[in-house]
Image 1 (tube, rainbow over the protein chains, first blue to last red):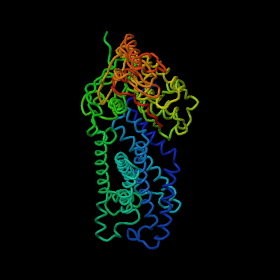
Image 2 (image 1 turned 90 degrees about the horizontal axis):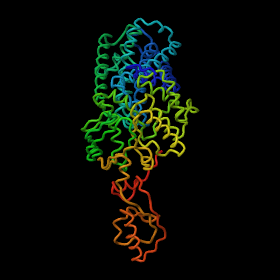
Image 3 (image 1 turned 120 degrees about the vertical axis):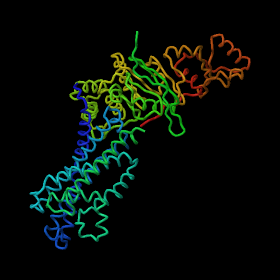
Image 4 (image 1 turned 135 degrees about the vertical axis):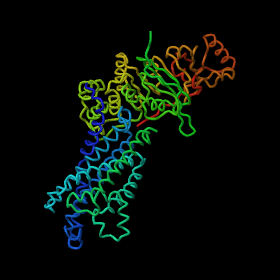
Length: 259
Length: 308
């Protein structure tokens, strides 16, 4: 028996990854198929009708990073939120609560687990879309793309953590998803450049943090963006920090978990 | 001789809305004890265990496990504690072995295979080690819960109704294993509805009622303190002058408490005087159930709950 001080959170991370991996058909393959359906339908209908970035890139190419990032974000959220509500509903959360894991351990393990799931699905979508748009294989700014993927998945993983702890029933969680996460994702410029929107909706989009994640991620693919990538990175990093502080504070107080 | 305290509970209060689940509970359990926590449903047993395990927070009071405060020093307190929860919970994603390995890992313990194998063996789970948790029967799942509480070799083990809904065979083997752990120096704290179990296993017992400790003594003293005899009487009725001595009354007749054998004479005389025919009469040994009934001041013990 070897006691590794402070290593308990790695087991929790391992458990989180193993949990979604065991049902990969539903947690990885299904969201990939969904993203591909969007790609097929939207590119088929819109390729010849929509001009993005002044016609510098085709619509299908434009759509790919949006769909990849959407998959990253939605799956990161789904992982923490469904794992936590599942554990709460079945009662097996007690196995984690009885251990010496600290709030920071808990946070790190769940959010990293969500990031792994989001990035695995995103990478899967990206690889498959290369068959449609092979030119995307060479990214002009891969580290920008990676930075936004990491921060975006961390943000959604944290949001999923908060939602999963808050929700007492599955329908509360799906309300969180349907009325907050999905609209914010869809209205963030996954499917269009916000420059094609009327001025009012452009300014509304600027209030949506998801917009900066998608726009910054897309910059990594094309070197083109609606707002400067450094600004987006700052906003996204700020959001990640704020949400992390919020989640850690809630965990330290034992909110909902240790009543 | 200085005996260290395994668990120290000091004036713990916990309210849920207007209900005082724990209304100032103080208890000390010494290292190496086999301690029983008894009480009817809603007495606060599970709330007390939840506070001890850090699953819920006390409104006031202090709780220490081997001297470690469960809030301020929660890491050490939780390392020292193994809890078998009352609810039959499990993680459907994993096998029995994975469940135990993961639980072990949460405590930062790697390469724990030898101990996990021993746990599987003692709980008769070796054949099921690679079976998914979902496929196990209720009794098997209960054994895994016991195993999970033991992966980090906690010096203090808390069992919250571990034999509720468990078959006789498992109950026997489970108690044999728990007794062995107690002999090896582990402190055991047990809550149960089965009074005969507590009587057979526990060296000392605390009885809880409405969030308070109403009795706290060695099992021996508790049994001795309920002095006198108990008579089970099958008859139409009991003489009016003896009504107040009836501790319970059911289809099997009346149970009447006596102070001594002299009382038996008086009871028989009263029956004769009222011309009450005795269908059956038996002298009963004092058992924990009668102690429990007398202390709780209720006519009947709480029925064992059936749990899934």
